[in-house]
Image (cartoon, rainbow, N blue to C red; front, side, top):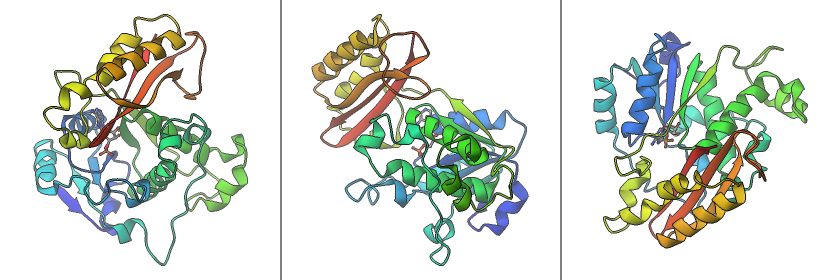
Amino acid sequence: MNLISSIADLASFHSCACVPTMGALHKGHLALVHRAAQFNKPVVVSIFVNPTQFAPTEDLSKYPRTLDRDLELLRAANVAAVFTPDVETIYPKNNPIPTPQLPAVATQPRLEDAFRPTHFAGVCQVVARLFDLVKPSIAVFGEKDYQQLRVISDMIAHENAPSQFSQSSVSAAKSPARNGGERWPDLKIIAHPTIRDTDGLAMSSRNIYLTPEQRPQALGLSRALQHARTHDSPAAAEEAMARMLTEHHLAIDYAVVRDARTLMPISDFDRPARAIIAARLPTVRLIDNAAIH
Ligand code: AMP
């Protein structure tokens, strides 16, 4: 397994299957790695705790960092290379990295975009930078962060075909790697379903913040999603989720049913829909989602 921290050393892995992560790896990340391995391309996992996607009030400094264990897991998973850039490599001081234009799904739904207003600008910035450096042909992302998955998919579509989107000239002017063609012409995004513990809790690096007493409470999210499935209107499903979360003494940021593509509100189950939750315990904020109808 190659340990790469410089841009030059990435050159031999262009066209790889890439799995971007922030480390503190768990079985959810490893499932993405195994999915990436199915494409018969070298698998490159990036580990970078991206400062620009954390608000000043969030957990950047205490975000779990377990690099030695991560590398052991990735070696056992037979990945070709692990890219562990430092902040200066991703964000060189003398060459500011532009933030790609945010797609509507990063600003309109009032979900993570409302509760973490600077988050998706940071996500798009780092993912675009990683794609420019790593030049993967496959990138695997988890459905666990469903709005992020939709944002990245639309950002790629947007950067590759700016003329099809409004305000495209802004994006076209900012994009560093485009010469009249697509910025990432061969890139395909693969979505991987959420991996859960046996009790239903969606795996997350942040689950280590849960105390043993909080764990039964945290199960409120997956139970609410299960429960939502038994209702035949989005409004009824939302009510049922709110009840379940409250019964588990969770503070609700949102518990909604949305159009699975745009993440905008719907009044009927007349299209693919997604139930999406963010809820808080005193020490941790949890997110989860599921396809519904
Ligand atoms: P993170 O390290 O949290 O930035 O996550 C890196 C990638 O792993 C993202 O694409 C996440 O959506 C994905 N991921 C995180 N947790 C899970 C999970 N439980 N199941 C599937 N994918 C996950």
